[in-house]
Image (tube, one colour):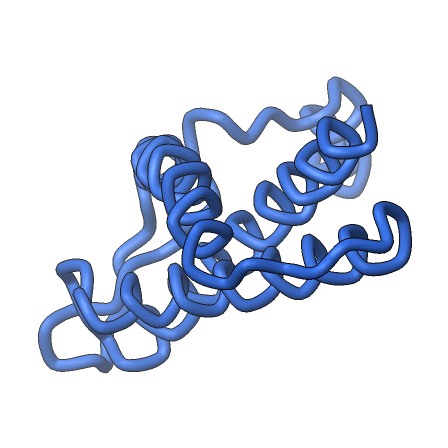
Length: 138
């Protein structure tokens, strides 16, 4: 029972870590004006997630189960858990990334091009439709 609890806590830590690392990867790519995914960012994200999940698993195993940790089998098991979650999270994040992006910098980096999907999604309240008419005195 404790082993299931330990892996469940590790799973929660993995999901949170994958989400946070994907958000940071997206911001780094925007900061460096990358149009494509940068593969070293993915490797770093997986390693960060592995370290965090291994730390959570080690703490749970040592303090809850009071057992020793076997390093190699735990790394393999955690990698088998991390990789599918990271891949699914990456594709889901890429699919919905355009909604979060309000604008795209142009090739020169000077002019900003507004995202049409963002403009279509944004809906104004009904009281703002007549806002200019009140100020004009109509």
